[in-house]
Length: 191
Image (cartoon, rainbow, N blue to C red; front, side, top):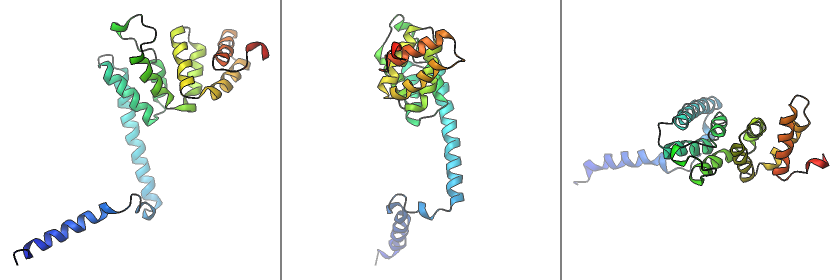
């Protein structure tokens, strides 16, 4: 008798939670294509907004190193392609208190890991930067990122193409051939 006033409230709570208990994706098949397209466009816009903000954090020298490395990791996990250039640029992040340290794992590992999450999609930019760079530390870290991301086979094919290209300078071709060797490709004398 005193439960009668609670009955509508219980019924309301049960009906409100009913949709939450369904299997994930159960209603996805019911969505018309235009709803899916709209949702996908919204998701792309949100990814671009967040990706650009994370790039800005990574680029900001005023941010603590932990914040910058967290931004790099998230960019890699999102596989936000516009971030590849920024991650390459920061692969040898210069932090004053670590001046003179070639490979500080607390800094370079997260950056190489973030870059590696892009896999083969980042290979052209990594190889192009390697060939054009005159900084041996940057080259060393780029080779390590290619090896650790398991993108070496793709990088070997791409760098071999650069080494044979007619448009590259002779020095760039030499660096491309050297990269092929560093990644386990055939030695220069066999090509």
